[in-house]
Image: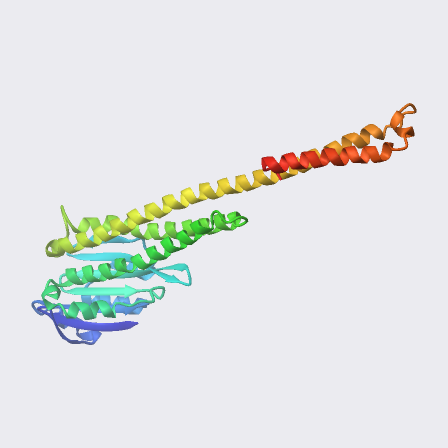
Amino acid sequence: MLINCVAYQDGKKLADIPVEDISEYVEKPETFVWVALRDALPEELAKMQEEFGLHELAVEDASRGHQRPKIEEYGDSLFVVVKTIECHEGEVAVGEVDIFVGQNYVLSSRDGQSQQGFLGVRARAEKEPHMLRLGPAFVLYALMDAVVDRYFPVLDMLETELEKIEEMIFTQGRQRDNIQRLYELKGKVTLVRHVVSPLMEAVGRLHGGRVPSMCQDTQEYFRDVHDHLHRISSSLDGIRDTIATAMQVNLSMVAIEESEVNKRLAAWAAIFAIVTAFAGLWGMNFKYMPELDWKYGYPMAVGVMVAVCLYLHRRFKKSGWL
């Protein structure tokens, strides 16, 4: 679905144009066309390929979707894949944005998983004609910067969720639930890391050393995007390490709790073992046992067993076993 199709000249908006007129505007000097699509159909991509002269392999990747974040060069043009990350009720949703960049055009296509569009990016770019004058390379930077900036709220959500779990680690009876939540959080962190790491590697190719010719004047902007990604990656490493530590502490708490239960069971077993020993001794029913013929033999036996049990209970209680 076509969102908008706009022509720019010398950093200023010329007009919203129909798709059929794209080839006319890209021939004008100091002019480029910026097209935005959502859930692009094969016919729409084929039309854009005809108007812009897109490389067939790049169009094929965009049609298939589910690409790894990457930047590929096709002559004087670039094909860029970035992943969007959004939070919906505590769940992480990953979308995809495919960007075609040439000397006189920018084409972006996002899938339905990406709920947030880029109308705000276009509006901000149009308010900075001195930056928009840099051409399609600046538009590519603006789109990538907007995508990366949307990673930070997801990072904050992950850190907040981790803090809540940490507060519950020492709550008795919640250890097993905490382990499950930690594993779920670890899965979310891994998902975000699979988005950030390859993109950081790809953006590193747009500044310093050999960079595409169209990005020569915008290297410092892509360096800024790379720095943001590096910061996010470092935070993800910190969260992952904290999760591993929390798991170890949580498992230790489970072991301590089980040890406490075993101590209580052992203490009660010892108490009942004494009762069983006395009952077994006096229950042998030998003929010559003075206690059996004594008037107070039974009360004495019960009293001895109760006294010994109370003594053991007191000792176990004092030592913390009960």
